[in-house]
Length: 178
Image (tube, rainbow, N blue to C red; front, top):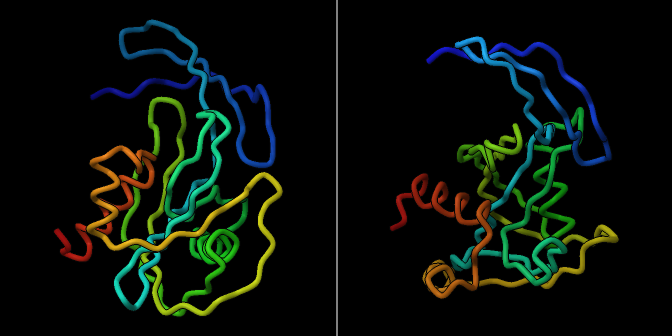
């Protein structure tokens, strides 16, 4: 496939989490166009696995949905931070856990039609509790469920966060759990 040619890039808006951009491009057939998208420095999602095999989850209110969402701990990677260091920060902030064992499982494009974000997925194990302050926009309830219950919650629609679903599939594939 032929690539599109980027003619220009404009920053429309920026905040601490992302930049909204507009690129002007030319298609291989010569047709021009504009592409509006969100640029980020990446994201991380952590699949925390307790020694008894349960998975640590967080339940939090999602403004755009107008309801609570059950998810794995996650967050956007700030400019200049590595996915590894930010994953540890997000796990502590959202789940109150510090992990001693980390495994990078893979990555995925979280929504490749609207953002250039790549989400790196980690498995975390070997926990100790840690005290951290939550972000002011987050009111989090911490949960622990078995992988079987997690799958039941997917089937029932109780877990419907796309990044959590993708991360669970990556975790299953990496660990051989079916």
